[in-house]
Structures are given as structure tokens and as C-alpha cells.
Length: 217
Image 1 (cartoon, helix red, strand yellow):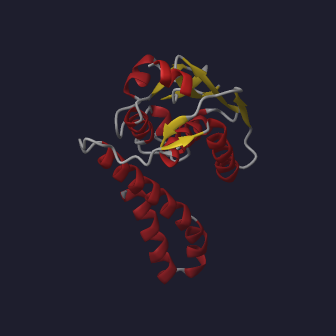
Image 2: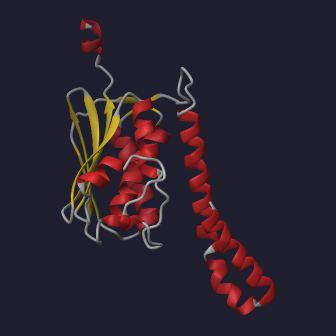
Image 3: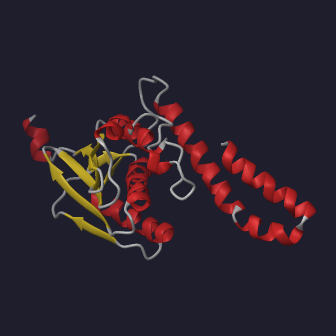
């Protein structure tokens, strides 16, 4: 929280003392405010999901995976512009019972990580179904992770060496929150990664049983 707040304070002080120099700084204030908003939102979401309540604060609805992907793609274009994203959605996917805002948030986070660490290479999103689950696999061919980094990747506020620069940013909450959201849905987020060979981050959510399956259960 302190880092973007400090940058905003400097910009405001310059606005009073050196208006000419302040103009360039003020351009970044919007980005800093957006960073603060995301960070506070992540912290609040983690607190709610980790509160121990018997019913997680999920607004569950039946969702078609393809409809979620359409919104995820639109957000990617808005945030990442012309950066290449290849999307593959299998046919005949079952629906999932999910909070669509939170489910998209998980995939958005995985895609943002792929964009940060993907060395400019195209990012892939593959949506399929396996063993009663719908999977959203985000694949990059970037810096990858060591076994030690992968083991700690879901620890809140932990960051790898590659994520400690202003260029990549982040405070180490994204993956921790993503896993919390997935597990609140009865799913999970997993990582498959090798140094210098990239990372596959996969969100898996339980598929809603078909009417035939429900009748036989």
C-alpha cells in the first residue's frame, strides 16, 4: 500500500511546488490509484474467503465457459492491447456453477502473470473438460519457475526474484487469492513450470452434472 501512496504524495507535492514537473508525474497517478484499488480489493476478498464462515460469500450462478471466455478476452484486449492471446475452447463443454466475477478474476490474474513473465511471447488460454471438471489452462513460454518457487508461489505476499522489479510489479497476493477463490468453488489452481521454459497455470472447477448424471446419482 505504501509504494503507490508514496508516488501519489510526491506527485501532489510537485503540483504545488513545481507544476511543470508535476504534469508528467500526475499522468501516473491514475495507474497508482488503480493499483491501490486492486490491492485493497484483493485483501478484502482474501479476508472474506478466509473468515471461516460456513458459507463463502459466492454469488453462484450457472455459467457457460464460452461466455466467461468472451468477457476474459475483452478484458485482455483492454489491458494488454495488441499482445497476442491464442484462445482454444473445446466443444460441448458442461456448465459450471460459479461466481462469474470471481471466476473471471482468477483467469484474469493467471493471464496477467503470463503477460508479465512471458518475455513478450504469445500467451495461450485453453479451455476444456476432464474428469468432471472444466479447466482453464493459461500457458506462457517465459522465465518459468524453479521447484522451490513453485512450492511457495501460493504463499500470500511472497514474490519470486523476477517479480521484485517495478517492471513486473505485484505484491504476491494474486496467486494466493486465485487459489482461495478456486477452492471456495470446490476447485483448485495448479502450476506446472520449469525455469526458462515457461509456466502452465490451470484453474479447474467442478462441472455441473447433466440431467442424466443427476438422475443416476
